[in-house]
Image: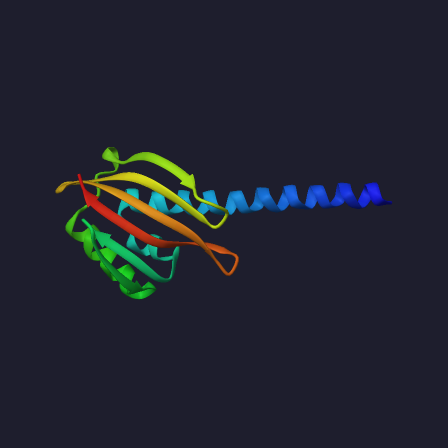
Length: 134
């Protein structure tokens, strides 16, 4: 009986770890896709309640709704060039912080985008976006 309990516990933790990993990578994949096509609407679905957005080092905190407007304005002024989009790096720093670094290309130039994804109440959501012109 004890072996069964130990085996059951092991499989439970493996499954939980796999599901957590899938949720993290799913949010990152969705966020990258939204950035690539310049969709503030799709990106906003992944925002936490407050989002820090930085343009070339100038940081501001926004509500989820305000952040959607800020990103919509950015994408309007910097229409995407999906052919120039590149994934630079994905990673994590501990269990609840993940990040992705991508290159966003527009007709006005390229931006290095650094997004942090954190866990909030069991869901992985975008916590901050840093956009720096290359």
